[in-house]
Image 1 (tube, rainbow, N blue to C red):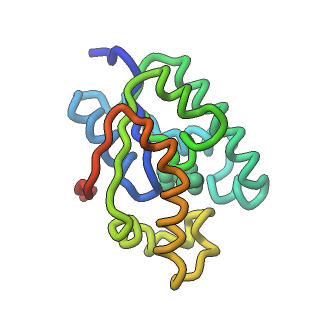
Image 2 (cartoon, rainbow, N blue to C red; image 1 turned 135 degrees about the vertical axis):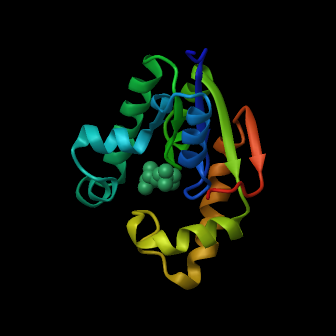
Length: 163
Ligand code: S3P
């Protein structure tokens, strides 16, 4: 059955957005409903997300990210995992709110830290952060982003399983 509106999963890197968006699509019996915005950006650019950051810079990535968001919003409703920074740039959060239901996954910083540390090198925003500064960095960036994340329709506090 078709969705009535888009469902957006938002939240920090490592919060489980893609995992849960995909799971809900599977539970509805149609995995095609799931869309990972980062995958779409990489596909359209013909480059990986780390390569976009490294070769074009974060501003260029954010412009591609907004382009992808606008494109997806215009299409039939999907269950969308947004990149962690997506709602926090330009008027993206307003667009998300106008286009459907938004769900903010909000696990504790200690959980984010534990999940992200092993993947640090592959994540453009985290790769350069020293291990001793890592938890503080996550805490600070999350605090800055809460203004946007907390505008979501639903907020899930706590660590959901991602296994
Ligand atoms: C980013 C999160 C990443 C990806 C990019 C920037 C961010 O997506 O969009 O590396 O600014 O938090 P995930 O949250 O899906 O890891």
